[in-house]
Length: 204
Image (tube, rainbow, N blue to C red):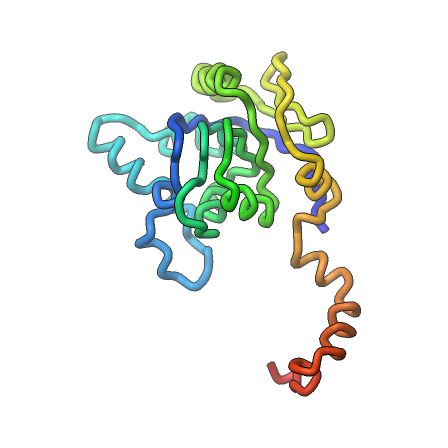
């Protein structure tokens, strides 16, 4: 199991509240049967719109390439429950998201793939976003143990529930690893189930 104790790296700020999953990964890119390649289309329409207006979206800014921490606004990940949204963000390189608040399903889907999420008040987030824009090479560090986010000499407490913190620190966020780690119990349970015990599991 993969324990997550901290996330270090540069930060990329994405301003705005109520950024929904269709903006994170537009529906036309959900036709594949795997999540491979989704990172190429994360925030696709927002990036195209910014380009058309003569602006550069943060995910296209050269100074933010390689960032591992995303700073976002309120109700991040609202809208449909598509798992593709956190997958696209993580495959781009993000390992943690700090936002004012999250849509519940997006938050859960992020935890299930080991992408740490924590919240901060709006005023502190705006200050950290400005810092990331002004000093793009500055290292940010999310400390899961201490529930803090540091940027240079600045350290602020983040909100993360005990259950989420425990899942990240223990590795219990990884449901697949949990099953594989105790697969003999899975086999024993399957053998007791009448609708499974008659199958030729080796042939499935």
